[in-house]
Image (cartoon, rainbow, N blue to C red; front, side):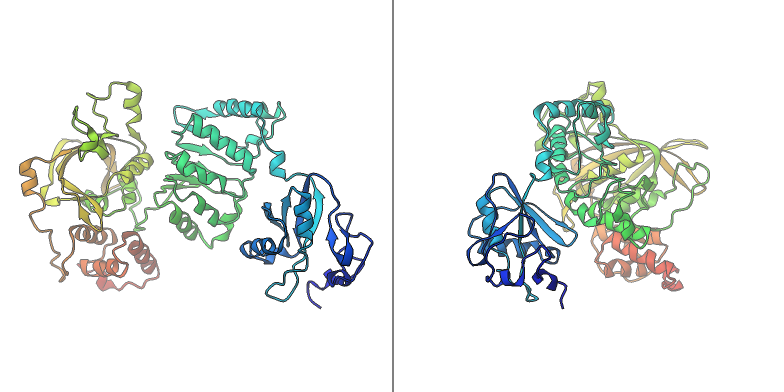
Length: 539
C-alpha cells in the first residue's frame, strides 16, 4: 500500500475508487461540501460566498507546478486567494460558485510525477482571515493616534512592541495584528505618510513570521538604521532577504526560531551580515570588526578600544570602513564641513558632501546644527560607510599636533584624495581635506577618537600638480608585482593588522581576489587552527 491508498477507500468521508473512475451515481458524501452529478461528476451546492479549496498531501507539490496545472484544466479562470500550507495540506480560497464547481471537477484529473492523482476537495467557508482583519477608516485614525504616542521625535524612533495589546486599541475593540497583511500594510502606510524620516523601528513581540510586507520599508523608509524584530516567529534567515536593501546599522533577531538554526554565533553573524554588510550591532551586542584580527583588550578606559593611527588611511581606502569602529570612543562625535558657497552644490564635485555639511555660516537653525552632528561611534562609522570610496595620496599628508597632555591628544591631518568610482578608477577632480582629531588614551598601547571634524574642499592648482606623483612605496621585504595604489594600501593595512609579513599578506589577499573581509576571515580561521607557519610572521 502507499501513503495515499486510503484516499480510495470507501466509508472514510473521501471519494471512493468507483467515484474516481466515474462509476458512482447518487448519494452526496464528504460532509455536505460536494455531491455527485451524472457519471460521477462532483458539484458544489449552489450558494453565495467563499469556498475553501483543499489539496490533501499538497505540501509535497511546488506551488509553481500545482497552481498552473489546476488552471490549465479548470474550465473557469480563477485566482487562488491566500494560498498556504497547513500540515500536509494545501489550502486556498475562491469566492465564486462556478469557480468552486469547476475546481472540484479537476479532482483526479492531474497525475503527479509519482503517478498519483491530485485530489481536490471544495467546501463552503467563512471569508479568509485577512479579509476579516481589514481596518475600518475610523480604526485607522485610532491606530495613527496610537502610533503618534509611541513615536519619539527626538530620536526618530517608533516603538510598536506588542502593539496588539495597546490599551488605546483594546479599549476600542481594534485588533492590530502585525502578522496579518492588512495590519502591517496599514502601519507602513502611516509611517510613509507621516514619519518617512524614521531611523529606528521596534516590531518586537508581534508574532511576525513573514517579512513580505516589510520589504516596502526599503523604498518607503530609506533612512531606517535600527530594526528590532526580536521575540517573533521568524523560522528561517531567508526571510531577511526581503529586507536586503535596508542600510541597517543595528538589528535585533533574538528569540526567533531562526536563531536556533546556526551551529555557532559566528555562523549566525555571518548569515546576517551577508544581508546587511554595514551592520555594527546584532541583538544588542557590538559585532566584531569584519577583519577579525585580535584587538588588544582595553584596560585604562574600558569604554574605549585601541587603534594604531598608521592603519587608519589604509582601512579608510580599503572599501570597508567598519574596522574603524575600533578607532572611536563609545560617545564619539563627528561633523563634516565644506566651504561656504552660493553656487549650486550639485554642479560641484563637493555635492556629495554638501548635504551633510555643518558649515555654521550656512546652517543657522540650531535644530539642524544638532541633527548634522553624528553622535556615538555606531552612528559615526555608519556615516563614514555612506561617504564615497576614496584613494588618498599618503605622500601628501601633513600632520600637526595641536595639544598634547597626559590625558588628551589633539592633532590635525591634511592631504589630498580622489574618489574611487569603480574598478579602482578615480574621478578626475582632486580634493583636499583637513581633519582634526581629539583623542584620549585607550588601554596601554593606543588612542581612541572622541571628536572628529572633517573639512573637505577642492584642491588648489599646486596641490593637483603635486598629487599622486610619487610612486606608492613598494615593500622591500619581498618582490611584489605591480599593484594599484589601493591594493598597496590594502596590503599595508592587512600586514599591520594580521602581523604577517608583506609576502604572505599579499598571497592571502590575492588568493581571495583582494576581498579584504574574506581574506581576513580565512586568515582568522587558519590562525585559530594553527595552520599558518611561523615564517609568515617573520618581517
